[in-house]
Length: 232
Image 1 (cartoon, helix red, strand yellow):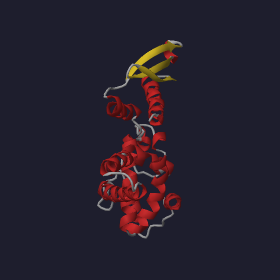
Image 2 (cartoon, rainbow, N blue to C red):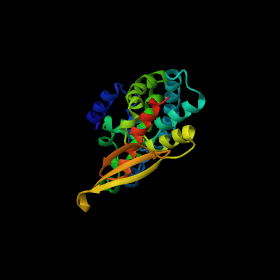
Image 3 (tube, one colour):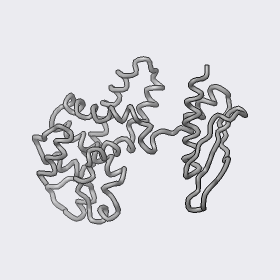
Image 4 (cartoon, helix red, strand yellow):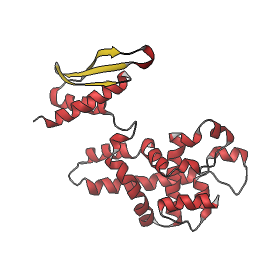
């Protein structure tokens, strides 16, 4: 396992002084059910610590990057970034799933790919680095990892809620909400394509096609948002 740890440490560009912290960060509680030992701890305490550390790192980052934003805007940005989806996405980039110690049951049920397990392991890893070094070190390591995610949140599945954003915009501007209508359904039952239009104040703003109504509505909402931004 040491060689595996060496690979992971190279990915975050940090070498642990106390390797047991890294072992603990990667130990899911299910593993202890099959490997009971006083010398083995699960990663839940480190996850708790890492959650607080990432909260501060992220808050400081968006505060400094968005100097014109008010408290409400900063809170919205923070709520999107500090999420299971984002942390799991970073964990996948680091291939953390390959290193987690799981029970056989979790292994069989796809635990290495599950967002909740990956996100928890990522937070635990942050907590472990923090305990092994200091805040500035952990910040320098992980702010670089989250920066690309912050700039590309719309590419992380489950993060961007275009329909909610569009509704907030239309309520503020027109005192109304968007209406989504199905224009057409084409293709066989097992492979349909849906075309959806979004209507705002009796005006068709955008249309989009996708393999599900939900996805088509999201795409139409995304287009409508950009069009609304161009209006004076």
